[in-house]
Image 1 (spheres, rainbow, N blue to C red):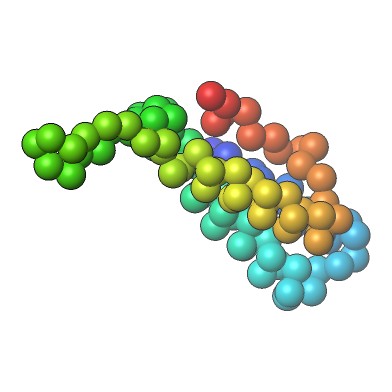
Image 2: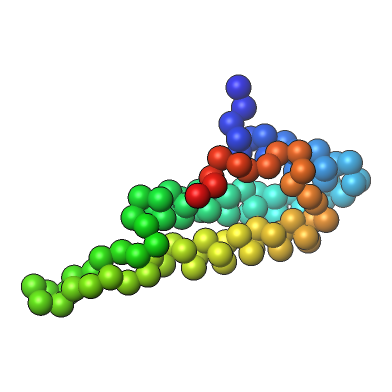
Length: 102
């Protein structure tokens, strides 16, 4: 049984082939997209595990909460993933990613 990531890759490659644009550059962009997909999933897992704020402590008297940097990084990764899809003129209608909803 194919993983969700494999289904996404197959879908993107199929759409690329259907567009008659299967140049290596575009395949490389799909691999970049899939690498960002892994990063996105790790960021989502971190946010789920630690929350949007994380505790910090420099010494016995200096401690507090700060924002979880994974939140802002997730926004950046999602934006880059969308830019790659726009560059490829591909839509994600065949294999959506509904597993990672908050």
